[in-house]
Image 1 (tube, rainbow, N blue to C red):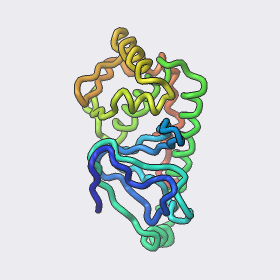
Image 2 (cartoon, rainbow, N blue to C red):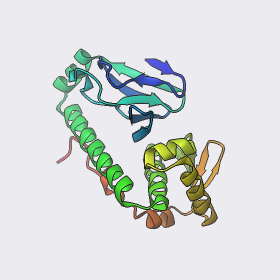
Image 3 (cartoon, helix red, strand yellow):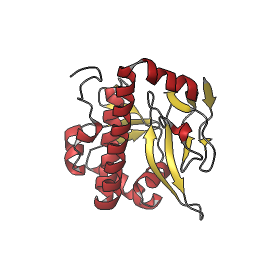
Length: 213
């Protein structure tokens, strides 16, 4: 069990991974940073997420993982992780499914940055995270915790912070989102889905449990 303050690297590109990290409390992100300092966030982690299954088989990290909020996580060593997979076919199938969902999310993020407008990109991030949190019981009606800053959204959507600010004002003006402190309110999720062309199929939230046929 480990704890990490907000805005710190859990592991950096080039480091040798020694364990699998499971997020227990808080938010984290996976990111790539260019030599000139520009940064692209490619995934957000919330409680229950494995940062990378079987990552310890790599010689070095090809990306970095950082906390967004104060983070509590579990380190699972290689021997323990492999023993879990060996002792339970159901756990192994669940881990396969987890990796397939992660790949699906990565494809959706590529499409988001490559093809959607600024308004659609940011609305899509709101939809994805709100629905992911709701599926974990971490939303309260039409609201949820929202620790992401405008810079975080810029890094995730390939936009400038100024463009993100203008786009958020547009979304607020349309009555689609409200933010107050560290809280997000989505008054009309269906309308937000429509404007971002959001299809939740890539999250596979209605999938069968790993042990079913």
